[in-house]
Amino acid sequence: MRQKRFLSIFLGLLVHVLVISSAADIKNLNIWPMPKDVSHGHGSLYLDNDFELKTDGSRYPDSSGILKDGFLTLIDLVKGTHVIEANFSHLDSSLLLKGIHIVVSSPSDELQHGIDESYKLYIPAAQGNPLYAHLEAQTVYGALHGLQTFSQVCHFNFTSRAIVVHQVPWTIVDQPRFSYRGLLIDTSRHYQPVAMIKKVIDSMSYAKLNVLHWHIVDSQSFPLEIPSYPKLWDGAYSVSERYTFTDAAEIVRQKAVAAGLRCILSNQERWYLDHLDATWQDFYINEPLTNITDPKQQALVLGGEVCMWGERIDASDIEQTIWPRAAAAAERLWTPYDKLPKDPAQVVGRLAHFRCLLNQRGVAAAPVVGFGRSAPRGPANLPSPQLQPHNTATSSSDTTLSPSHSPPANRS
Image (cartoon, rainbow, N blue to C red; front, side):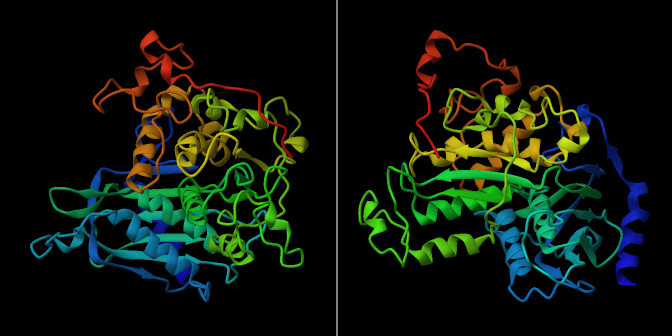
């Protein structure tokens, strides 16, 4: 009964929203990756200082704390490093968002390929007290995606010292286009500290990537402890550049990453992040279903992954080599094909906003202008990246930004 009432509220309030359908409208929304269906209004709400999580009517018991941890992460993300000093004593209480009400249909948190990652998010306009956002998902993992989307419509207001949700009411109905949306990291060519790997995993969730492909060992080094073969990790670069069995298990458990999934992808080398001369536009236009016209064959494509091979990266530059180019591929894998602009110039402003959001969250994402991991070209008040042509040769003054590129080493 509660779920039916939730659905009635969800559908009944659609009349109050402005539907966003055309590419011209979508490019003005700062959500990445773009959801399947989005509508919004023009009002604003403030997050209550005691913003809370409600789960009445949810079948998910949260015994492992996944949902609670996701909610606490949401609070940390929207607050950032700011001190919330808002005084709401004189504010109309109908403008305060008290919390978020999450209803998860499945009691299971078993993670496997093909799991339902869909969600429905509704953030109301001022219409009464108490006021709650509503998030509905089939599984807890869909709910986590919904929380990530919620975090992107919240902003710290430097005048009121409060967290504000603009453009309410929001109605978002979302699900991924592909079930496999991965990132490969390579710790065999250069060691990556455990803390950095965990940080990369966190940043993956911001872009709704869902599979970590950890290339731990290769001919160059064997840094992983195998208890039954204790001498194998003598092949590490040094005694301090190793992963204990417990380290590896903790990394896998941190985000419950599923292992052993197949990946079928056309033109995969175009998503090699170590190809520093590849721009984010190259990543964005790389369509996994290119030249696959048979619907039965298209159904066999599980998704794709961006590959961060490790010959030319270490802990000092892995993040700016991954981001924002991996985000371009992430939207290609998440957003429905008919919602993807054919011209990357239509999303450059939104991607630049997401890149700034990553920076604010402590992720060293590179600028959207330039090649892979390029440095900023000048002060922040330079002309908009939209004015920069795609794949245009650099001027003589910019030649130092052009990366060296050599054929990739033999990989397995």
